[in-house]
Length: 225
Length: 225
DNA sequence: GAAAAATCATGATAAAAGTCATATATTGTA
DNA sequence: TACAATATATGACTTTTATCATGATTTTTC
Image (cartoon, protein in one colour):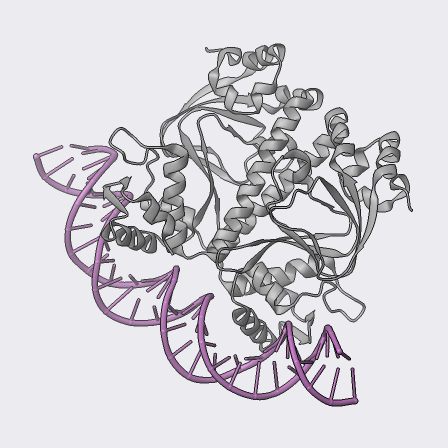
């Protein structure tokens, strides 16, 4: 099993602020998991009891609404920590986490890492900064949801995916989502999401082949009203 | 000027975890302010450089959208700390804070409190818990915005105001908002907010007199679809 | 206290988005 | 490979929400 001390992934998250000794201890108690596309990592209401360090892959954080639709709140990717809130709260999970492609994650039990949170201020501050950043992003999403059209939100989602996660060699978006996922990010009906994507195709803003989407006119997408 | 050590308000926020010595020091450098209804505490893009401890009153945290509408993201009330993110980030404010009624606040400069954040883990953890809670709330709002109708969102807002901030002796909601504020919380046009409130009146769910709103049928409001 | 400004209210109409139906394409799998 | 299951696509129609117009009220200001 690989060791946390040597893992490059940790550089992208708060774990980078742990001391060597702390990392060695964490490494000893972590468990590595391979999670297949579509598999549930945890669900709303679950007791999470630890954090997941994402070594590879992408997952969605979503919440089931009363109308039976899943709303995707955030995408969590390679390098991120998943379940930070569980370290701080006694509450059960507010969101579900489901793998969007095959993933490799390490699970670190809360019991092991909680002492670091109490002793290593740099680590705590790092987690705090991360959370502050998540909060800003969430606030921005609220504003978008409330004030922008489905067209705009979908265009922005495509731009976000392009700029944050990049493309494959064939220039298609490297994160592959179903139309339903797009609908659940944007907060609309699946048919509406499909319709808008078709419009974008007709306008030459994107091209598609199955689930693969290629951004053809980034600036155009950014100008969508 | 009153002293933080003796201030009851601090018990409701993270400042309760500061030691007596720390509080005395903070107390020495804080400035008290009276802010009148409608006055701006800080605006999007401002460098905030400290936190405000709300001794009395309510303010709205909002963000201007591209379409010129303000989206209210959160109400901050007596006992809350305002501007916690500024302690952690170097960024400028992401939201504006505007007083909804006359307020009394204390401003604590970042330079003074930042050392406590580095030394007193209980305080840091408290801020972290607060932020985790804000994040959960924000996620829930995203889901509501995305998946619920204006009617539902407005009904829930009324219930929230009732349950969180209570009523005046005459049973009207103690937080008084304009129809525009309601529209900006719910994320809709002012006319739509007014229309829905009128419907609620006709259905006997609420009664109004000017800006004062009385909840007549709480359970009915909770059942609004 | 009266004039001006802002807010609240409601109707008419338009635009946006949702729903239902149905057809086609893609994917998984026996 | 073929068949079933799932996902994508599009049309027709409905519902929701936004916009514009116009008064009535309330609040502010002089």
